[in-house]
Length: 86
Image 1 (spheres, one colour):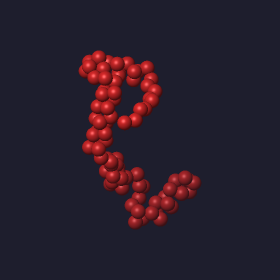
Image 2 (cartoon, one colour):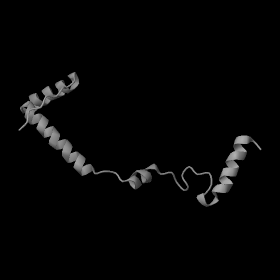
Image 3 (spheres, one colour):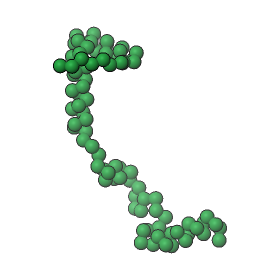
Image 4 (cartoon, one colour):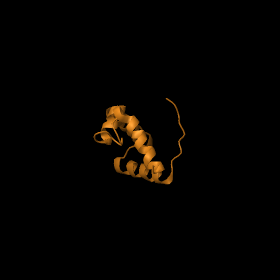
């Protein structure tokens, strides 16, 4: 068993004191239960795969593209004409 020194801000100290008062747990027990609860949350949450993030963006058909990728040459020409006004 190791001994650790941690620094808590005032708000966290108040929360910890409140938990201790409400539950009757020692500070060590309260912190231990909090760590286990956080570990379980992290393990069950899982990590998002890149496709999951992409799917949640919901860009619709073509996303932000001005033209389909198969017609990118025309899209570049169109963008240059729009920028230069010719």
